[in-house]
Amino acid sequence: MSDYTPALIDSWRSTVSALGFLAPTSTREYASSRPCGFAQRETNYFADRTHTCRFAENDVMIMHADTNRGIEVLLNPIYNKGTGFSLAEKERLGIRGLTPPRYFTIEQQCKKIWTNLTEKGKTGMFRWRSMQALQDRNETLFYRLLVDHIEELAPVIYTPTVGEACLQYSRLFRRPRGMYFSADDVGHFNAMMYNWKNDVSVIVVTDGSRVLGLGDLGAHGMGISVGKLDLYVAGAGIEPSSVLPCVLDVGTDNEELLADPYYFGLPQKRIKGDAFMNIVDEFIQAVKNRWPKALVQFEDFSTDHAMPILKRHRENVLCFNDDIQGTAVVVLAGIYGAMAAMGKSSGAITEQTFVVCGAGSAGMGIANFIHAALVHHGLSPQQAFERFYILDKHGLITNNRELKEGEPGVDDLRPFAESRRDLPDGINLREVIESAKPTALLGASTVSGLFTHEILTRMGELNKNPIIMPLSNPTSRAECTAEAAANATEGRAIFSAGSPFDDVSRGGVTMVANQGNNLYVFPGLGLGSILVGSNYISDGMLNAAAEAIPKTLHDGAIRRRAIYPRIADIRDVSVKVAAAVMKQAVDEDRENRGGKIAHMISREGIEGLERYVRSSMYYPEYRPTVFSPGSGRGTL
Ligand SMILES: NC(=O)c1ccc[n+]([C@@H]2O[C@H](COP(=O)([O-])OP(=O)(O)OC[C@H]3O[C@@H](n4cnc5c(N)ncnc54)[C@H](O)[C@@H]3O)[C@@H](O)[C@H]2O)c1
Ligand SMILES: O=C(O)C[C@H](O)C(=O)O
Ligand SMILES: [Mg+2]
Image (cartoon, rainbow, N blue to C red; front, top):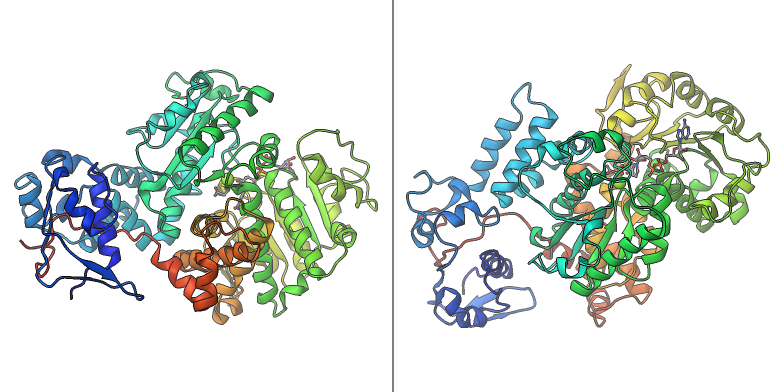
């Protein structure tokens, strides 16, 4: 009996595949993979119900790579451990003498890097560059640091710093990551997919046309795809080898980039219309051919394309649009959280009135989804439409707005517009607040400072706890800061912003600066839909995710008016979100895994499902490449 757990077997397997060998699926196959460089005694094992693997008593398993030895091992970020190779590994892998003599554990390595990163005066961009460099040389350590310090590092690899990085991505480019499908490659996408050697389960793809609130950044959008997938790995334990960041480079209309001699994307104007949609189609078809079960997350496509692409492919491939659906889920979860913070039940959502600034993919995704929740909780569709005041850059949108047939987004907007008959079209936010007397003010406008002191003060006069959500990213685009909201409302606001802010204390009251970002949603949503084997992400599954998030809040947090759990708990949140999504998929009969999950739920309940989800998650630690039972990892 020994400690050969499935996790350990898996870790060996990953190492094997990292080295470029065929990954065996059982220990017997390890034996047969000897020509690939493995010396081991044949082992027998069986897994009992508690997933413990047992080996014959005197088994010795030694992994010994004949290829990818020596310096190549150290230059391979998947395999490299820096100063973390044991003496046994150094000996077997032919790297004795190629690294410094002393051995450090991954914990010690993390501590050292963390100290460097957090030295006084180090900027967000310094940290972003350091993290990229770490990912390029030692992937395991990169993810371990990210998992251990997710709260502090999410603002680095994600909003807001990733926005800054995307602005200068060509100049920051060091090593390729992900895949670029450009307009010049049309007709070759299918073949190109085979240039990516790993098996892929999650793809994030952008055309870079609306990167955060920063506008068209063309091929620089790669930074966003990479950042999102880093969160899939750190936040939901998706295997790093199974994620693929992608950019569809169809040009850019950003004149600054077009004039930049070092811009690395296609230096041409954007391809639009049918030609653009055909490129997206070709991409999706190529993904389906190569990895039929992979999940595709559409990210930061401009609003004119975001909804049409989603509608076109939603039933075609396992996919969702993060800006429309992920955002809607996190905002609804936050509204439920706000109800709890006010001591109300989630049904009290029907008492709320929403002013939404921004009628783009984020604003309309939010409005539609909350509308469905209002109906679910008992309002008629018409009553629910009347609870919304939606503004765009021309002011309030009413039945007098000329909405052009066939224009993207018009179908979604029309019922909201037609229900707004009581006010003149185009009135400004201040006038809307005066008439609507909203309980919740949401911003997805990309306009920094749109929620002025006057507006915020009025929200504070109208409500004991006004819900204030400046959701635009990055921080430079937020409709207001946490400080501004706290100042104007004596800290009474229930505040949530897309990018991180610090909590603010005013006269003994602390206003929690919640982060209302889809990062609470997409990792768990993705994990759940893959594990359950669904080929579709339904509204029911999205709703299950929205309801699962506030359930992770503890009483103490609710009393402090926290409406989301801490980002430090993202892995626990993802487990709950994934399990809720899977349960819903099973209830809707979308399970594509022969009833395995349904059986598990009926046998072990939702807790059993959560255990299963958790056990499926990757955790970054070094894989033993040379192993004999009884020997410590740092010794021979
Ligand atoms: N927090 C999150 O998780 C999250 C998720 C998705 C998007 N976002 C953010 O939401 C923002 C919008 O994204 P989008 O894709 O909808 O962008 P978009 O450019 O398509 O939409 C912006 C909308 O704001 C409107 N607008 C402009 N000025 C306005 C004003 N003064 N008053 C009211 N409305 C005004 C525009 O007319 C448009 O309808 C971005 O900054 C993005 O980063 C945040
Ligand atoms: O990327 C984010 O931080 C959230 C969202 O997807 C956005 O586009 O702003
Ligand atoms: Mg986005």
